[in-house]
Image (cartoon, rainbow, N blue to C red; front, side, top):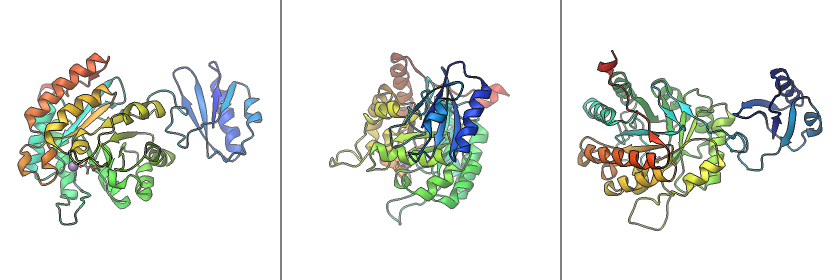
Length: 349
Ligand code: PEP
Ligand code: MN
């Protein structure tokens, strides 16, 4: 439930509402907005004394959040959440964030070549899995902590932020030591112990949609993260399973405007896993930007045929350059833009 304060409510009036909610045995969270502050009542069991709250000075009204997901809903918070990273990347603002890199970190040379080139082409976040949740137990599983160290080296050299996956609850703290964003993969979207652990981290989390998850299930999974106290959550649409065999998944583009309406959280699109085919990635990246995605996460490899995972969907650098150019034109056509490229470390020092 939300206790909506009047436009001119004072800080003392807001504090009094918070205290009363706590006295009633619930948790309270003030949510400042552009027009007014609301106080979220967490854990509504249907027995809240709304009359008592509505009678308090400065209170405009109490609103019941009708969605099953509460804190991630637009009803709860009207203004867009913007996740800000240490290198200045903002995900969820007017400008679109570009995350790119190989599926997996394979070697120092591979990740540094990718980072340098992608940074120069305008990406501000470097992706690369160190722990890979592979469909087959015999496939390359990632370099583990050594992969994280190589990502950190790439960040030190290029200034890019790092996004990389945590695959189990015990791995969250280790990944958070190195990463700017913890990725939770499609296969783990409903791994509740993992969600709870990542929800207790103060590192932003990107939650990929499960391959057969409904939008409600996806948002409820995000609610786990926020309910544990992590408000820096980014959603990622990466395609869902269907009967078509021409692409790896079906890119559910309509989920992007749907989720942007239902939730204040930023939504990033992953046209690489959604299509699984290199030649389909750039067209679907264009479509994702047109549909309102707040960012793109794309697999790019210095030598795609030699990639140890997801080579068939990994772009060549030239294709990524084309993606950047075309995405920028589309972003501008809808009143947005791509985030500016990072200043080169040599120029700024
Ligand atoms: C990945 O990002 O490389 C990955 C494994 O993605 P997903 O969880 O969407 O399959
Ligand atoms: Mn991949």
